[in-house]
Length: 358
View (cartoon, one colour):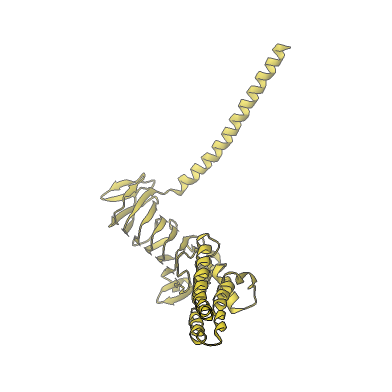
Protein backbone atom coordinates (compact mmCIF):
# COMPACT_ATOMS: atom_id res chain seq x y z
CA UNK A 1 0.00 0.00 0.00
CA UNK A 2 2.76 2.39 1.00
CA UNK A 3 4.72 1.43 -2.12
CA UNK A 4 1.76 2.37 -4.30
CA UNK A 5 1.52 5.75 -2.61
CA UNK A 6 5.20 6.36 -3.31
CA UNK A 7 4.77 5.65 -7.03
CA UNK A 8 1.65 7.81 -7.12
CA UNK A 9 3.58 10.73 -5.62
CA UNK A 10 6.24 10.41 -8.33
CA UNK A 11 3.70 10.19 -11.19
CA UNK A 12 1.76 13.12 -9.76
CA UNK A 13 4.60 15.55 -10.59
CA UNK A 14 4.51 14.63 -14.27
CA UNK A 15 0.71 14.70 -14.33
CA UNK A 16 0.55 18.20 -12.80
CA UNK A 17 3.11 19.40 -15.36
CA UNK A 18 0.97 18.09 -18.24
CA UNK A 19 -2.23 19.62 -16.80
CA UNK A 20 -0.62 23.05 -16.25
CA UNK A 21 0.88 23.06 -19.74
CA UNK A 22 -2.50 22.09 -21.21
CA UNK A 23 -4.31 24.88 -19.35
CA UNK A 24 -1.72 27.40 -20.58
CA UNK A 25 -2.10 26.23 -24.19
CA UNK A 26 -5.88 26.48 -23.87
CA UNK A 27 -5.58 30.08 -22.65
CA UNK A 28 -3.25 30.78 -25.59
CA UNK A 29 -5.62 29.40 -28.21
CA UNK A 30 -8.70 31.22 -26.89
CA UNK A 31 -6.78 34.50 -26.91
CA UNK A 32 -6.76 35.18 -23.17
CA UNK A 33 -2.99 34.75 -22.85
CA UNK A 34 -0.35 35.67 -25.41
CA UNK A 35 2.07 33.01 -26.62
CA UNK A 36 4.94 35.12 -25.26
CA UNK A 37 4.11 33.75 -21.81
CA UNK A 38 6.11 30.66 -22.79
CA UNK A 39 9.24 32.83 -22.92
CA UNK A 40 8.83 33.54 -19.21
CA UNK A 41 7.90 29.95 -18.34
CA UNK A 42 10.94 28.62 -20.18
CA UNK A 43 13.22 30.69 -17.96
CA UNK A 44 12.18 28.44 -15.08
CA UNK A 45 13.18 25.15 -16.77
CA UNK A 46 15.80 24.39 -14.02
CA UNK A 47 12.83 23.81 -11.70
CA UNK A 48 12.25 20.55 -13.60
CA UNK A 49 15.71 19.36 -12.58
CA UNK A 50 15.05 20.34 -8.97
CA UNK A 51 11.77 18.41 -8.80
CA UNK A 52 13.33 15.39 -10.53
CA UNK A 53 16.12 15.42 -7.95
CA UNK A 54 13.61 15.55 -5.08
CA UNK A 55 11.81 12.51 -6.52
CA UNK A 56 15.04 10.53 -6.96
CA UNK A 57 16.30 11.26 -3.43
CA UNK A 58 13.16 10.82 -1.35
CA UNK A 59 10.87 8.42 -3.25
CA UNK A 60 12.49 5.27 -1.84
CA UNK A 61 13.09 6.56 1.68
CA UNK A 62 10.99 6.96 4.79
CA UNK A 63 10.67 10.64 3.90
CA UNK A 64 8.83 9.86 0.64
CA UNK A 65 5.94 12.30 1.44
CA UNK A 66 8.44 15.09 0.66
CA UNK A 67 7.95 14.13 -3.02
CA UNK A 68 4.54 15.83 -2.91
CA UNK A 69 6.43 19.14 -2.81
CA UNK A 70 7.41 18.65 -6.47
CA UNK A 71 3.91 18.99 -8.02
CA UNK A 72 3.25 21.95 -5.72
CA UNK A 73 6.38 23.67 -7.04
CA UNK A 74 5.33 23.03 -10.66
CA UNK A 75 1.81 24.31 -10.08
CA UNK A 76 3.16 27.30 -8.16
CA UNK A 77 5.40 28.40 -11.05
CA UNK A 78 2.51 28.26 -13.52
CA UNK A 79 0.28 30.08 -11.05
CA UNK A 80 2.68 32.97 -10.53
CA UNK A 81 3.45 33.35 -14.24
CA UNK A 82 -0.13 33.13 -15.53
CA UNK A 83 -2.19 34.59 -12.70
CA UNK A 84 0.41 36.60 -10.81
CA UNK A 85 0.65 39.40 -13.40
CA UNK A 86 -2.45 41.03 -11.90
CA UNK A 87 -0.63 41.57 -8.60
CA UNK A 88 2.72 42.59 -10.09
CA UNK A 89 2.18 46.37 -10.19
CA UNK A 90 5.47 48.17 -9.59
CA UNK A 91 6.63 45.85 -6.84
CA UNK A 92 9.73 44.84 -8.77
CA UNK A 93 9.10 41.19 -7.91
CA UNK A 94 11.08 39.10 -10.41
CA UNK A 95 8.50 36.36 -10.97
CA UNK A 96 5.44 38.59 -11.00
CA UNK A 97 7.19 41.29 -12.99
CA UNK A 98 8.15 38.88 -15.77
CA UNK A 99 4.69 37.35 -15.71
CA UNK A 100 3.23 40.80 -16.25
CA UNK A 101 5.47 41.37 -19.26
CA UNK A 102 4.40 38.05 -20.78
CA UNK A 103 0.89 39.34 -21.35
CA UNK A 104 1.07 43.11 -21.13
CA UNK A 105 1.18 45.34 -24.21
CA UNK A 106 3.91 47.94 -23.86
CA UNK A 107 3.82 51.26 -25.70
CA UNK A 108 7.17 52.82 -26.56
CA UNK A 109 8.34 55.91 -28.42
CA UNK A 110 11.69 56.60 -30.08
CA UNK A 111 12.83 59.78 -31.85
CA UNK A 112 16.00 59.84 -33.97
CA UNK A 113 17.24 63.42 -34.21
CA UNK A 114 20.19 65.66 -33.39
CA UNK A 115 22.19 65.11 -36.57
CA UNK A 116 23.37 67.84 -38.94
CA UNK A 117 22.16 67.70 -42.53
CA UNK A 118 25.70 67.67 -43.95
CA UNK A 119 26.48 64.53 -41.89
CA UNK A 120 23.90 62.41 -43.69
CA UNK A 121 23.84 61.31 -47.31
CA UNK A 122 21.64 58.25 -46.74
CA UNK A 123 19.51 56.80 -43.92
CA UNK A 124 19.56 53.01 -43.64
CA UNK A 125 16.45 51.83 -41.78
CA UNK A 126 16.55 48.16 -40.69
CA UNK A 127 13.74 46.39 -38.84
CA UNK A 128 14.19 42.90 -37.39
CA UNK A 129 11.59 41.07 -35.36
CA UNK A 130 8.85 38.51 -35.01
CA UNK A 131 5.41 38.43 -36.54
CA UNK A 132 3.33 41.57 -36.34
CA UNK A 133 2.42 44.75 -38.17
CA UNK A 134 4.79 47.33 -39.64
CA UNK A 135 3.69 50.66 -41.06
CA UNK A 136 6.05 53.20 -42.63
CA UNK A 137 5.02 56.60 -43.97
CA UNK A 138 6.19 60.24 -44.10
CA UNK A 139 5.35 62.45 -41.15
CA UNK A 140 8.36 62.98 -38.86
CA UNK A 141 8.51 66.45 -37.31
CA UNK A 142 11.07 68.03 -39.63
CA UNK A 143 10.84 71.45 -37.98
CA UNK A 144 12.15 69.87 -34.76
CA UNK A 145 14.96 68.10 -36.60
CA UNK A 146 13.38 64.64 -36.33
CA UNK A 147 14.59 62.13 -38.92
CA UNK A 148 12.81 58.96 -37.78
CA UNK A 149 9.91 58.76 -35.33
CA UNK A 150 8.99 55.28 -34.09
CA UNK A 151 6.05 54.22 -31.96
CA UNK A 152 5.69 50.58 -30.98
CA UNK A 153 3.13 48.38 -29.28
CA UNK A 154 4.84 45.17 -28.24
CA UNK A 155 4.08 42.22 -25.99
CA UNK A 156 6.46 41.10 -23.31
CA UNK A 157 9.42 43.42 -23.97
CA UNK A 158 10.52 46.93 -24.88
CA UNK A 159 12.31 47.04 -28.25
CA UNK A 160 15.70 48.65 -28.68
CA UNK A 161 16.50 51.20 -31.36
CA UNK A 162 20.12 51.77 -32.31
CA UNK A 163 21.31 54.79 -34.31
CA UNK A 164 24.85 55.57 -35.37
CA UNK A 165 26.73 57.29 -38.18
CA UNK A 166 29.09 55.26 -40.35
CA UNK A 167 30.71 57.46 -42.96
CA UNK A 168 27.82 59.53 -44.25
CA UNK A 169 25.24 56.82 -43.64
CA UNK A 170 22.92 57.03 -40.63
CA UNK A 171 22.00 53.50 -39.52
CA UNK A 172 18.72 53.19 -37.63
CA UNK A 173 18.29 49.56 -36.53
CA UNK A 174 15.64 47.72 -34.53
CA UNK A 175 17.46 44.48 -33.60
CA UNK A 176 15.64 41.19 -33.12
CA UNK A 177 14.75 40.50 -29.50
CA UNK A 178 15.73 37.01 -28.33
CA UNK A 179 12.67 36.52 -26.14
CA UNK A 180 10.07 38.17 -28.34
CA UNK A 181 7.46 35.58 -29.28
CA UNK A 182 9.58 32.45 -29.64
CA UNK A 183 6.54 30.17 -29.85
CA UNK A 184 4.52 32.07 -32.45
CA UNK A 185 2.69 35.28 -33.05
CA UNK A 186 4.04 38.17 -31.06
CA UNK A 187 1.37 40.71 -31.89
CA UNK A 188 4.00 43.45 -32.16
CA UNK A 189 3.11 46.68 -33.99
CA UNK A 190 5.48 49.33 -35.31
CA UNK A 191 4.46 52.69 -36.73
CA UNK A 192 7.38 54.56 -38.29
CA UNK A 193 7.30 58.11 -39.66
CA UNK A 194 10.15 59.40 -41.81
CA UNK A 195 11.34 62.87 -42.72
CA UNK A 196 11.09 63.81 -46.40
CA UNK A 197 14.47 65.59 -46.24
CA UNK A 198 16.67 62.49 -46.62
CA UNK A 199 17.07 59.54 -49.01
CA UNK A 200 16.44 56.10 -47.49
CA UNK A 201 17.35 52.48 -47.83
CA UNK A 202 14.83 50.21 -46.07
CA UNK A 203 15.34 46.59 -44.95
CA UNK A 204 12.64 44.58 -43.17
CA UNK A 205 13.27 41.09 -41.75
CA UNK A 206 10.23 39.67 -40.02
CA UNK A 207 7.96 36.67 -39.67
CA UNK A 208 4.37 36.44 -40.87
CA UNK A 209 2.45 39.68 -40.60
CA UNK A 210 1.15 42.79 -42.33
CA UNK A 211 3.54 45.30 -43.87
CA UNK A 212 2.31 48.68 -45.13
CA UNK A 213 4.68 51.18 -46.79
CA UNK A 214 3.49 54.57 -48.08
CA UNK A 215 6.60 55.88 -49.86
CA UNK A 216 5.10 58.12 -52.56
CA UNK A 217 6.46 61.32 -50.99
CA UNK A 218 9.78 59.84 -49.89
CA UNK A 219 13.14 59.50 -51.62
CA UNK A 220 13.98 55.80 -51.46
CA UNK A 221 16.90 54.11 -53.19
CA UNK A 222 16.21 50.52 -52.21
CA UNK A 223 13.81 48.28 -50.30
CA UNK A 224 14.36 44.68 -49.18
CA UNK A 225 11.60 42.74 -47.42
CA UNK A 226 12.27 39.24 -46.06
CA UNK A 227 9.24 37.72 -44.39
CA UNK A 228 7.14 34.64 -43.90
CA UNK A 229 3.58 34.46 -45.15
CA UNK A 230 2.74 38.15 -45.30
CA UNK A 231 0.45 40.80 -46.68
CA UNK A 232 2.48 43.61 -48.25
CA UNK A 233 0.81 46.92 -49.15
CA UNK A 234 3.29 49.25 -50.80
CA UNK A 235 3.03 52.61 -52.56
CA UNK A 236 6.21 52.97 -54.59
CA UNK A 237 8.41 56.06 -54.24
CA UNK A 238 8.37 58.63 -57.04
CA UNK A 239 11.69 60.43 -56.63
CA UNK A 240 15.32 59.39 -56.35
CA UNK A 241 18.29 60.28 -58.56
CA UNK A 242 19.18 56.69 -59.43
CA UNK A 243 15.70 55.13 -59.35
CA UNK A 244 14.57 52.54 -56.84
CA UNK A 245 15.00 48.77 -56.56
CA UNK A 246 12.60 46.67 -54.50
CA UNK A 247 13.23 43.05 -53.50
CA UNK A 248 10.44 41.01 -51.89
CA UNK A 249 11.32 37.58 -50.48
CA UNK A 250 8.51 35.78 -48.72
CA UNK A 251 6.37 32.69 -48.46
CA UNK A 252 2.75 32.66 -49.59
CA UNK A 253 1.95 36.34 -49.83
CA UNK A 254 -0.50 38.94 -51.00
CA UNK A 255 1.39 41.84 -52.56
CA UNK A 256 -0.30 45.06 -53.60
CA UNK A 257 1.80 47.84 -55.14
CA UNK A 258 0.59 51.33 -55.98
CA UNK A 259 2.35 53.11 -58.84
CA UNK A 260 2.31 56.93 -58.51
CA UNK A 261 2.07 59.25 -61.49
CA UNK A 262 5.29 59.66 -63.43
CA UNK A 263 6.57 56.21 -62.45
CA UNK A 264 7.26 53.12 -64.56
CA UNK A 265 7.59 49.71 -62.90
CA UNK A 266 9.41 46.60 -64.04
CA UNK A 267 8.46 43.33 -62.35
CA UNK A 268 10.57 40.17 -62.22
CA UNK A 269 8.65 37.39 -60.48
CA UNK A 270 10.06 33.90 -59.87
CA UNK A 271 7.07 32.54 -57.96
CA UNK A 272 3.95 30.68 -59.02
CA UNK A 273 1.52 33.50 -58.37
CA UNK A 274 -0.28 35.70 -60.85
CA UNK A 275 0.30 39.37 -61.70
CA UNK A 276 -2.76 41.59 -61.98
CA UNK A 277 -2.51 45.05 -63.52
CA UNK A 278 -5.06 47.82 -63.10
CA UNK A 279 -5.28 50.96 -65.20
CA UNK A 280 -1.60 51.04 -66.08
CA UNK A 281 -0.12 51.37 -69.54
CA UNK A 282 2.43 48.86 -70.77
CA UNK A 283 5.53 50.01 -72.61
CA UNK A 284 8.72 48.05 -73.34
CA UNK A 285 7.80 45.39 -70.81
CA UNK A 286 7.17 47.92 -68.04
CA UNK A 287 3.99 49.12 -66.38
CA UNK A 288 3.57 52.88 -66.62
CA UNK A 289 1.45 55.46 -64.83
CA UNK A 290 2.11 58.61 -66.93
CA UNK A 291 1.89 62.09 -65.41
CA UNK A 292 -0.12 65.01 -66.81
CA UNK A 293 2.48 65.45 -69.57
CA UNK A 294 2.34 61.78 -70.53
CA UNK A 295 5.76 60.96 -69.12
CA UNK A 296 7.04 58.45 -66.56
CA UNK A 297 10.74 59.05 -66.14
CA UNK A 298 11.21 57.60 -62.65
CA UNK A 299 11.93 53.87 -62.72
CA UNK A 300 11.16 51.32 -60.03
CA UNK A 301 12.43 47.75 -60.50
CA UNK A 302 10.72 45.06 -58.43
CA UNK A 303 12.01 41.53 -57.87
CA UNK A 304 9.51 39.18 -56.23
CA UNK A 305 10.63 35.81 -54.86
CA UNK A 306 7.48 34.29 -53.44
CA UNK A 307 6.56 30.62 -53.40
CA UNK A 308 2.86 31.22 -53.95
CA UNK A 309 1.11 34.56 -53.98
CA UNK A 310 -0.58 37.24 -55.99
CA UNK A 311 0.85 40.56 -57.19
CA UNK A 312 -1.55 43.40 -57.80
CA UNK A 313 -0.30 46.59 -59.49
CA UNK A 314 -2.57 49.61 -59.60
CA UNK A 315 -2.38 53.28 -60.59
CA UNK A 316 -1.95 55.34 -57.44
CA UNK A 317 -3.19 58.92 -57.58
CA UNK A 318 -3.70 60.69 -54.28
CA UNK A 319 -5.45 63.62 -55.95
CA UNK A 320 -8.03 61.36 -57.59
CA UNK A 321 -8.65 59.71 -54.22
CA UNK A 322 -9.37 63.07 -52.63
CA UNK A 323 -11.59 64.01 -55.57
CA UNK A 324 -13.57 60.82 -55.07
CA UNK A 325 -13.97 61.57 -51.39
CA UNK A 326 -15.18 65.08 -52.17
CA UNK A 327 -17.62 63.82 -54.79
CA UNK A 328 -18.97 61.25 -52.36
CA UNK A 329 -19.49 63.96 -49.76
CA UNK A 330 -21.18 66.18 -52.33
CA UNK A 331 -23.24 63.22 -53.45
CA UNK A 332 -24.48 62.70 -49.92
CA UNK A 333 -25.48 66.36 -49.73
CA UNK A 334 -27.27 66.17 -53.07
CA UNK A 335 -29.10 63.04 -52.02
CA UNK A 336 -30.24 64.75 -48.84
CA UNK A 337 -31.51 67.72 -50.86
CA UNK A 338 -33.38 65.40 -53.22
CA UNK A 339 -34.98 63.62 -50.27
CA UNK A 340 -36.12 67.00 -48.89
CA UNK A 341 -37.63 67.92 -52.28
CA UNK A 342 -39.52 64.62 -52.46
CA UNK A 343 -40.85 65.08 -48.93
CA UNK A 344 -41.96 68.66 -49.73
CA UNK A 345 -43.70 67.51 -52.90
CA UNK A 346 -45.55 64.79 -50.99
CA UNK A 347 -46.62 67.34 -48.36
CA UNK A 348 -47.97 69.63 -51.11
CA UNK A 349 -49.93 66.75 -52.68
CA UNK A 350 -51.40 65.82 -49.30
CA UNK A 351 -52.42 69.45 -48.70
CA UNK A 352 -54.13 69.70 -52.11
CA UNK A 353 -55.97 66.44 -51.47
CA UNK A 354 -57.27 67.76 -48.15
CA UNK A 355 -58.44 71.02 -49.79
CA UNK A 356 -60.30 69.14 -52.56
CA UNK A 357 -62.00 66.96 -49.95
CA UNK A 358 -63.08 70.03 -48.01
